[in-house]
Amino acid sequence: MKAHAVVASAPCVVDYVPVSVPDPTDDDVVIRVTHSWISNGTESSFVRGERIQGDTPRREGDPLPFPMVPGYQKVGVVEWVGANVKEIKVGETVFATISKLAGDFFMPLGGHVSPAVTHRSQVWKIPPHLDPVAVSGLVLTQVGYNCGSITSIQPGDFAVVIGDGLVGHWAAQTIMHRGARVLMAGKHDYRLSLLKLRPGDRIVNITRENLLDAVQEWAPGGLRLVVDTVGSVATLEALMPFMRHRGDLVSAGFHGTNGAIDIQKMRVRELSLHAPSGWNRERMDRTLELISQGAITTAPLITHRFPVAQAARAFELINTKKEPVLGVVLEWT
Image (tube, helix red, strand yellow):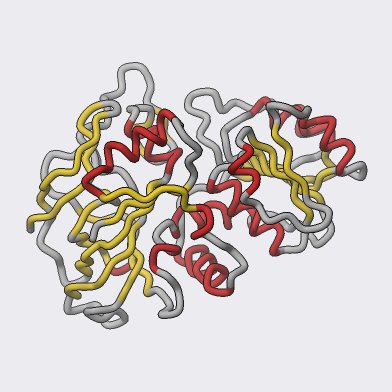
C-alpha cells in the first residue's frame, strides 16, 4: 500500500514523503489520519540521533537510527477493518499508536504515517463527545498519568513535579485529581502559567527562585512524592533530604548515558524509586476515561499546529525553542 509519512533521514533532517506500508492482515485496522501529536522529548531525541530504541540511548559505535518514522500517537477515521476485528467499525473515529511500515527503516514501526495500518490491539475508540485532537497525544498523556498514579500518594500529601513540559503537566493534573498538593518546578513562565493552581499549590521558576528554599517553606512536614520528568538525577538527589520517611521518587525523564543514582542516599529515608515507561491497555483506558471526565485536560496545552507537510518546521521549533512551545500537533487534512 502507498502512504505518506514524516521521515527522519539523518540527524535533524525531516521530510514529509511517500512511503510504502504492508497490506493489512485480518487483525489490522486501516486508519486515515487527521491529526498526530509530536512527543517533544522522545521524538526530538530520536530525530537528533540520541536514541536507538525506546529508552535506550545511542552509544559510541551504535548505528544511527535512520531512516525512521518517529512518533507513536495519532487520531483518524477507520477506512477498513480485518475479518477478525469485531470491536471497531469502518467510519469510527479512533486513536492509534504505532503502525506498520514497509521498506528499509531502522524501526519497522511509526507514528506519523497515513493511511496507518495498525494492529487492533493498538487502537482505541474515541467517545463521541470528545474532540479527537484532544486525544491525539493519548500515549504521552498516559505517561503523565502513570507518573502521577504509580504511587500510593494520599489527599493532603505534598508532591513536587520537576519539569513544566507535557508529561509534567499531566503528572501534576493526575496528582491533583488524587487530592495531593503540587509544586511544579520549571524554567518557562508561559508553561508554568498553564497549570491551574488550587489553594495550596505552587509553581517555581528555578531560573529566578531557589527550589530547595521554596520546597522547605512550602512543605515543612516533608514531601511524599517527587516526579522527575526532565531527567535530572542531581535535582532528585537534592530533594531527598526534604522527603518524608518511605516517600517515593518517580523518574520519567530521558537520562541518556547519565542515569546513575546513588542508592545509598535513598536508604536514609527508605525511599522507593519508580521508573515508568511505555503504555498498556489498562493505563490507556484509564487515561482516556479521565480525559473524558475533564479530570485531565489536554487541548489547552496545544501551542502549535502545523500542516503535516511542514513537519520539518515543527521539529525545528521543538529543537530550537525559538518561541514558547509545548503541545505540537500535525494536521493531515
